[in-house]
Amino acid sequence: MARILITGAAGALGSLLRSRMKQWPVTLRLSDVAKLSDAQVGEELVQCDLVDMAAVLTLVEGCDFIVHLGGIANENSFENILNANIIGTYNIYEAARRAGVKRILFASSNHATGAYEVGQTVDTAMPLRPDSFYGVSKGFGEVLARYYYDKYGIESACVRIGSCFALPTEKRMLATWMSYDDFTNLVKCVFEIEELGFQTIYGVSDNAKNWWDNRLAADLGWQPKDSVDSYATDLSLKEDETEIAARLQGGAYNTAGHFDDGDSGARTS
Ligand SMILES: NC(=O)c1ccc[n+]([C@@H]2O[C@H](COP(=O)([O-])OP(=O)(O)OC[C@H]3O[C@@H](n4cnc5c(N)ncnc54)[C@H](O)[C@@H]3O)[C@@H](O)[C@H]2O)c1
Image (cartoon, rainbow, N blue to C red):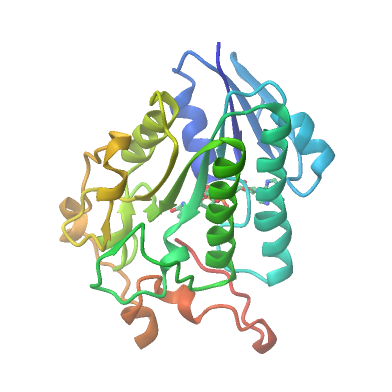
């Protein structure tokens, strides 16, 4: 039976996948720096900081596929991003190489290209334009994934997740929202496809206002089934706070990060 490692398993998307994937005929190895709730049948729990290479080497041992979600999921100080997202992702790829793991889904982010203008159609061949240190770390992860594919044949899907939440909560999510079902099905496609190679894809539902063009990843066989459009009229959505946030795809991340001014940098989605 295949063993799938999920990093960041105590987080929002990790918990979602934990509950959805328990039906799959696989062993789930769940890991996070935070404490996880008790192991169920078919689960193995490993509490570990991704910065700790020795621990990560043990963590990936015996796994067939890694869903790498662990890390800081919003803007933060460069030092924190460096540790959790940049060194942490390097540790996962290098440990995968040493352990012979052949496939990884890397949870990248739309914030790797968040400095493009709203309304511009962006595809996955266009240059990275990160909107934050967080977005820079996701760009690093994508380039690292490419390197490990070209040099060592480790297959990767770099999924630039839009806004994966139960429901949309702000205006930009009318373009960026991805349903939980669409995300789960994307993970399934990446796991099951015979040959993945190296793919970059925006994780977004079939929203009328979509800014992203996934045609280059068409052979992945993933088709989003949901759309944010059915929610758009019944919710009062928060307007973007500033002119820059409304003009650029990454929204408020484009104005985040002034830590020397006392801005905590914490942002959602
Ligand atoms: N949820 C979204 O809409 C969205 C959008 C874009 C990208 N993403 C990416 O998807 C992934 C999961 O997102 P989420 O919303 O579940 O975030 P989350 O913050 O809920 O979960 C991230 C988890 O990573 C863990 N973590 C942080 N630093 C760690 C470390 N050093 N070692 C081990 N574990 C560590 C945290 O404890 C947390 O449980 C993240 O990589 C995020 O950047 C999510």
